[in-house]
Image 1 (cartoon, rainbow, N blue to C red):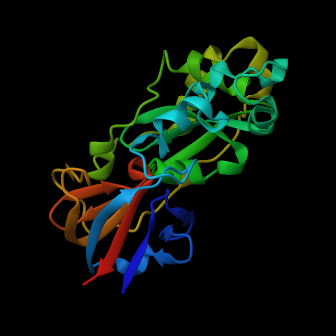
Image 2 (image 1 turned 135 degrees about the vertical axis):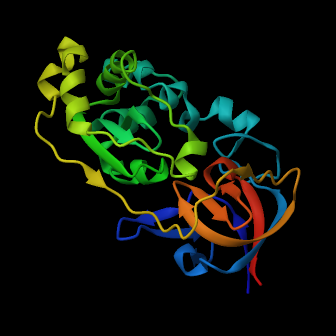
Amino acid sequence: MLYEGVLRKMQTENGNPIQYYLEFENDFIHMNQALNRRIQIDFIKFQCLGTGKNEPIYRQGFCRSYFFESAAAGEWIMKPELSKAHLGIEDRDLEYEKKAQLQPHIVYLANSSNVKVGVTRKSQVPTRWIDQGAHEAMEIVETPNRYLAGITEVALKAHVSDKTSWQKMLKNDIEDVNLAEWRDKLKDYIPSEVADYFIDSNSETHLEFPVLQYPEKVKSLNLLKTPSYTGVLKGIKGQYLIFEDQTVFNIRANEGYYVGIDFL
C-alpha cells in the first residue's frame, strides 16, 4: 500500500517500547508495525511547512523566505537565552512569542550518547527526550518562562555538554552515568535568579526504543542524492529510522520533503 505526504517529525507515545506514528494529511503509519518490513521511500517534491509551496527546504521544514520571516523560526527557538517576550519586546510577532515563551520551561539532563543539558517546554516532556534518543533523562530546573531556562542552559553548558553525538546514539554507544549526581554537581552553577526553581529531588525517566538491530556504522540517507531508497526497517530511535544495511534516515531533518512510502 502506498502512502504519500509531506514529512513532519514522528508523533510518539511513551511506552515499553515507545510507539511511533508518521502522520500525513489524510493518513498515518504506525511505524512500530513496520519493523522487519521492506520499505521504499521516494522523494517527490518539496512542500514548505509554512507556505505549502514547492520550494527548496532551508531549515526546520521551511523554505528560505519563510524561515527568515516567520515567528515560528525566530532565533530564540534555538537560543532560548535570546527570548524577550517577558520584557514585552517583539522579535517577529509578540503575541506568538508570548504564547510560546511565557509558559513553564524545563532545564533537563539527558543521556543519549553522553550527558547533556537542554531546554524544553514543560508540555514537551518526555517528547523532547524521545526525539533526542535519550535512554534516560531528568528535570533539574522548572522556570516560568523560556528566558530563565535559556540563561540556565548557557551557564551549565560551560560544565556539561549541550550536544548529542547522533552517531553514538544510533549505535547505542552510551555512557553509564548517574544523572542525580550530575544534577547535584551542577547546582552551584545555576544563576542566582533561577536558584529558587531548582528541583533538588527527582528521579530519572527511562525510555525504551523499538530497535531490533543497532548499526555498527551509520550511513545517512540523503533524499536529494538518493531520491529512491529501499531497505528493511530494523529500529526507530530519536527521530531516526534504522535499516538493516546500516542506513539511517532522520525524519526531523527531512521535514518539508513530500515523499511516497510503500511496503514491499
